[in-house]
Image (cartoon, rainbow, N blue to C red; front, side):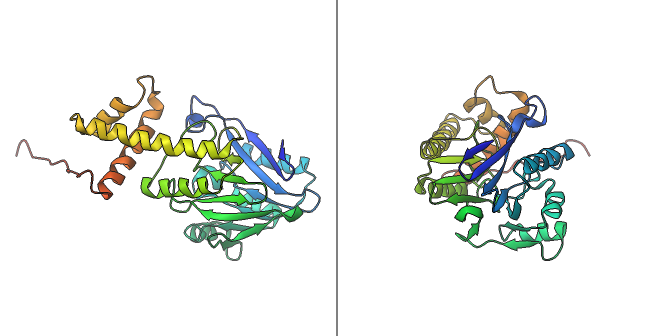
Amino acid sequence: MQISKNIYATHIEEDSSTFGAMHPGGTHIYFVGDPNDHMVMVDSGEPYRSWTKQIQDFYSELGKPRISSIVVTHGHGDHIGGLDRLQEQFGCIVRCHPKLEPLLTHKLGEGTVKKLRSKESVIAGGGVKLRAHFTPGHEADHISYYIPGDKVIFSGDTILGNSSSSVRNLKQYMESLETLAGLKPNLICPGHGQIIKNGTARVEGYIRHRTEREEQVLSALKSGVDSVDEIVTEVYSRNLRRNLRSAAGRNVRTHLDKLTEEGLVERQEATFKLVKG
């Protein structure tokens, strides 16, 4: 499908009852630029051959334009799967965060991967420029790509279309959300879920959501709830699906880590005592 003049995407459906539970709304793989000139591809999805084939078929529908580079948002397996097959087919360079480059070079071989600098632009056909903004938090090697002229952000997993994102470092993540909010995006093209038309409002909504969740965690602690599992029960919906409970627990831990880093919470390690012997 064509999203705008220079943005095209193939949407990959996922089974929400199994592996797709973390990606409501499925996955988008983007091609950016002019099909009659050259294009840049954003991420490569899961490693499944069926995914790679769908991407290849969509590439054929575009007329098999020259792919000048594949830009990677971060190194999770559902964003770099099939990268070896697609890079080999396109014969292009792969661009990524400096922290991800060693892994991808090991996978793809010397000379195929090039580090991106903060705010460096990757050029696509039609004069389109994708500016790399380092947005750690979901992962340390995360990059969001911004088209200044059109005010479009390719947000990877920092912003999702149909849900909130899991976070590794919440302090960094909140700073990254502020970075994206400052770009005032009109359109957000996430790695998963629907395309977001009112981009700035969505980013601001994410900031509010995380702030409110932090207040709920603090409130739970004040009431005497002191374990991650109990906090999940306290602050999340009672209708939370079982296969999402572990993700909720990870999110609670990121809030606790942030609060600990800020000196608002003190971590108390569990101790063990031998009963017999």
